[in-house]
Image 1 (spheres, rainbow, N blue to C red):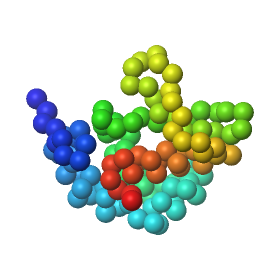
Image 2 (cartoon, one colour):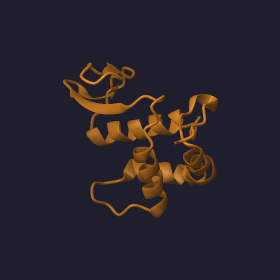
Image 3 (tube, one colour):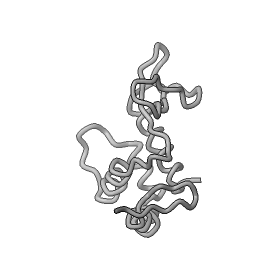
Image 4 (cartoon, rainbow, N blue to C red):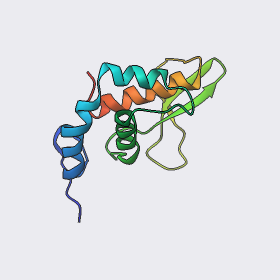
Length: 119
């Protein structure tokens, strides 16, 4: 049986909420965000960046949106995946990114905001 916290719209287990609040939040710094933005493919990442990315990847809170990157005629767009399997995604804003990497960084920032780790 798992126990979930429902405060602040979070559906994380007590253990994951503790990790988020006491470990991951402290790792999210301007330097880490700069590293994530500059992250070239196949680059060696810092342990802090790996830990933050792993946390975000393994904790898809069912109460938070799930994002995807789609290629459009005018660049790359961030979309929210539909909560119902097979339903079409919905755009998450009008922003268009010139590269997939820029759009993926935008997803990272959205996920950090969703988890309350960015203003």
